[in-house]
Image (tube, rainbow, N blue to C red; front, side, top):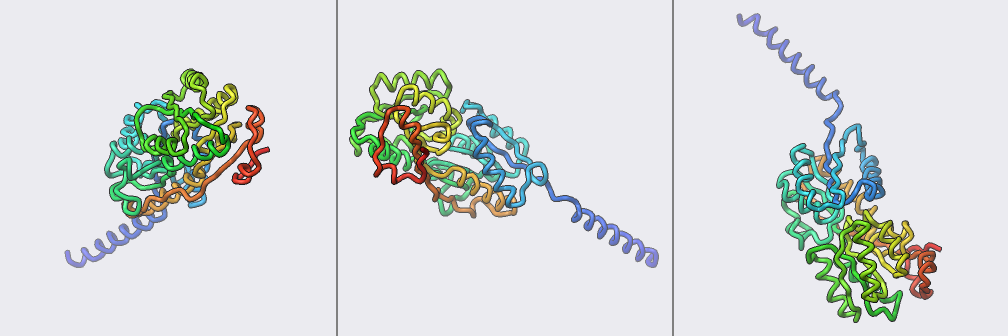
Amino acid sequence: MKKSAVPSILVVMVLLAVAVIAEAQQPGKVARIGFLDSSTASGMAVLLDAFRQELSKLGWIEGKNIAIEYRFSELKAERLPELAADLVRLNVDLIVTTGEPPARAAKSATTTIPIVMANAGDPVGSGFVASLARPGGNVTGLSNLGPELNSKRLEVLKDAIPKLARVGLLRGGGIGPQLREIRPAALALKVKLEEIRTQPDPKSLESAFQTAKQKQVGAIMTISTRRFFAERKRIVELAVKYRLPAIYFQREFVDEGGLMSYGADYEDLFRKAAHYVDKILKGTKPADLPVQQATKFEFVINLKAAKQIGLTLSPEFLSRANKVIK
């Protein structure tokens, strides 16, 4: 019995070695990424392209070694919790969120699956992370400095139109960090802020611009949200129709014919989000990845749009822009 046991053990060891080698030679596991957004697939196409391109540079190819589960609430915020829960049920390896409502929905849905915020406004104030340096928990990512930049945009509008006395602010419901930041800024600049609550659908937006004209505002701006971003083409068209100077939070509004934008470079934020995904998929814990604030900003002016509404901008003002479209 003892003599026959030796060959048996050798056979078992050889078989185990072959199994290990075979497993090592198999293609790696396909990582599953959840992508949660409150707008639409078409509205997010530009930023998603930047995200996927950066992932590709890092060796993560969609359809090869990663699969992305896209969930868009189609401008219906109430759908976000169920979409987040769906991603959790799928047991994705991590969830990428855009803006604060998706981040909140994802954080409420899971305390274990890593969450990467591509562009949160105020991650600490919103309770997503304990601090920027030490986020703790399962959430990390990037901040677009949204609340602070709204004040800067208001200042830019005042510089563009020195006699500006009243600004229409398109906003949704709720009192968020952006409103708490911009209201005192308006007082300091001696500008009357006309807050116009609206939903980002064509009918509501048309009504909002009619209200802005009735209130005799001299210019318009919007709160920074993915939902307004998704409807940027319509918002730009209405600003031209009602001949209202407007400043937007992303360059893509200007690409659609808008007057000017000042804000974080969102394509840069989404490319950086890809690096967070890469690190987490390779084993780094979200709690060990500090939240980064936006470092690249863009000020873009469209002179064609200015001409359409009869607005003349001073050479000094134009000289401040990163890019002037003629």
